[in-house]
Amino acid sequence: MHIWNPEDYHRHSSAQQAWARELLAKLRLAGDERVLDLGCGEGKVTAEIAALLPRGSVLGMDVSRDMISFARQRLPPEEYQNLRFVEGDMLDLPFERKFDVVFSNAALHWVTDHGRVFAGIGRALRPGGRALLQMGGRGNAAPILALADEMVTEGPWREYFAGFSNGYAF
Image (tube, rainbow, N blue to C red; front, side):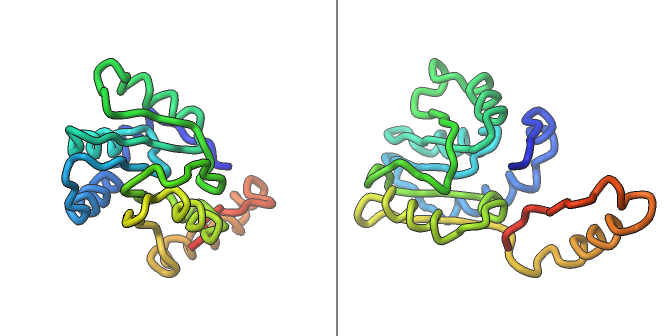
């Protein structure tokens, strides 16, 4: 599992937030849905979803305890009545027919068993529910990943990356 710094992510995730906003525009929410945000990180996108749901709610879920703690501190339930956060692994979704929408942006490429995640999403959705998922895909970061792979095998860096795996599952 990767270790995330929520403060740093919060300051430097404008690209991920822009991608999420593009997705949110496609959701066409009525405002009363129950939404699950998988891989919610530090919660800023989850809060944007909550703002679109005056009669609904959103649950942000992330495997990182630090990210969830940061989100809960920044976005307390006293101020955000329809917004909650839970620490959890998207590989083991515990929900049965609870959500109208499952949303995930820039998170699923960190998970190796997509089939297991998709099965959990299917169980979590109510009949007629929708999923809108965006993740890195095979090839879309190929040039930068090839450069990184080359660098970690070179002299000054090699010892620091012995046994390293980049963790992506495109």
